[in-house]
Length: 143
Image 1 (tube, rainbow, N blue to C red):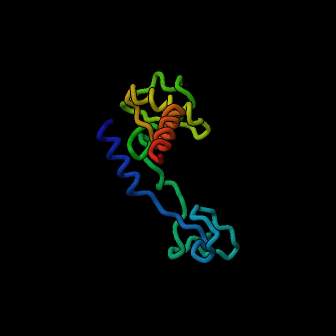
Image 2 (image 1 turned 45 degrees about the horizontal axis):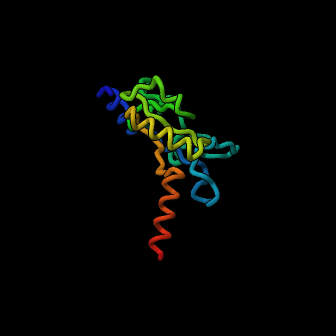
Image 3 (image 1 turned 90 degrees about the vertical axis):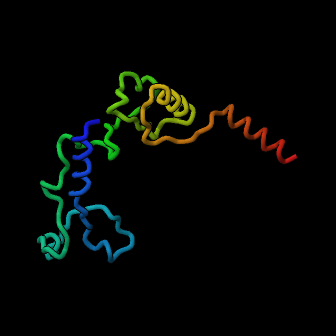
């Protein structure tokens, strides 16, 4: 990974704006996600300085690192073991899809460890055979 990309990722994080939703401090149920203010007399819509800034061009990240993971790798979404072929371990990291079940996830994680690919959302899932061994061990411990 190039030192220039690491520098740009740090610069991206430093200049990133924090945009507050109007009325966030007044209502507990409001999420801390940006929504455009629409009220006719809204001070934030009229962009009064004390009411917070709006997202505008200039707050975006540099084009070279746009969409990159903060670790500096390019994210690749993986659904099965075949998706791991042709990936570059130097520049790409994998994120296993949320719809993948436990059995297939174990296979994908094992294959990624062989290739040395970085897994962004690794889970410690025991295979069914390991689960059976653990339950047998627990039964013998109780006796």
